[in-house]
Image 1 (cartoon, rainbow, N blue to C red):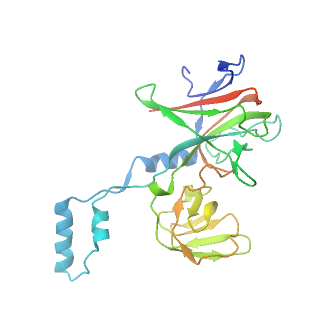
Image 2: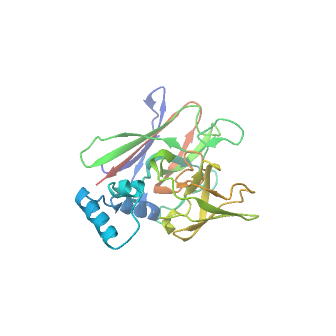
Image 3: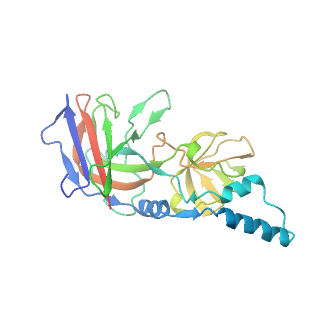
Length: 279
């Protein structure tokens, strides 16, 4: 890709379609900058055995209640600020067909008009293609997403924007404390969270109790958020995790964004996107 870090192209029967290559530099969004700064830091650094023993003696000497085995085990583990990692690519058609895509600005949060990658049932549309990773150079990583001939709906679509999305499976995220749910007519308010920050607006809050993720529309403080619509009643509390919109969410926040000259994707073509991050 030369000096570019983004390439999109069409293939027909494995061969690159002439005139279909789109290259350039992405913009790393404000969300991406906030995410990256948390990604390289620890929210808690593990204590050594000597430090834990000293803490136990201190608490005993000051008549403080002893720590539980779970709390002691937690002190011996490093905790990251976020477990979110780049997992997929979204593509979009822009404002109109063939109108302009979103200007390449740091303030971009979502694609203008995300396209469905595939549908697996009524109301079950997937908007994000998972990426594979490789390391073709020493100081960086390459993410590759391939959209097959029968993917991206409608099967004849104009594509002129793309975004990198982050996510994580529940098993790799803290399951959190039980939260209080306030069911309102047009939204749902969740309180009792921890570690929520303003940059997480637009991301997804999920739970085994509510199924797939619901988008966070407003962050009030590290403990309270509003979700995009009312759940209509249900349990009074549940455990939570951030990032559970997964591949399902239409409005996935993007950490990097690229607009490009329109490509027409039909059932005759694969769309391949290569996205490099270099350090």
